Length: 152
Image 1 (tube, rainbow, N blue to C red):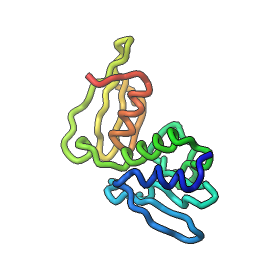
Image 2 (cartoon, helix red, strand yellow; image 1 turned 180 degrees about the vertical axis):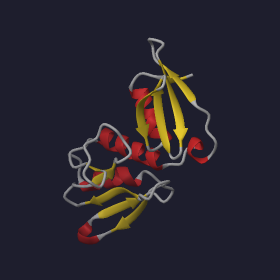
Image 3 (spheres, rainbow, N blue to C red; image 1 turned 30 degrees about the vertical axis):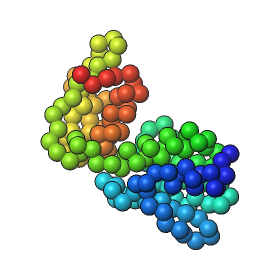
Image 4 (cartoon, one colour; image 1 turned 135 degrees about the horizontal axis):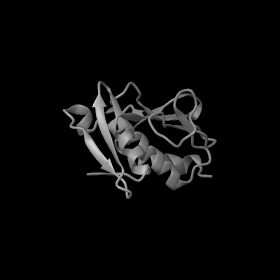
């Protein structure tokens, strides 16, 4: 398990995060460029090594009711990965800011899925069947990538 000091050094290596000291020696790190009403990327990092990272927009993490994943037993690699994914999920992409044309994604078996922006959601379709709905382009693209699809 990483110590508080080691976790702090890793988190502070991300210049886009702003440190905020809170009670009982705990530390939060805000991401002021967040595109959603969520600024805390790191929440209540405690001197005992416990703490949380926002993963509410990510898949593959067991999160609490606030969308936070506990990082107590994370390795350096796992901590860096979840922080980078959290920042990415909160970062405005070009697709989020402007007009978006539907994207076709294909896998090794030539199956295709279509990524469509509808209102404020990102939907993935297999022909006319809805395959998934996501809150951000980054989350949808991550899902497609994890499923073995590439954008064409």
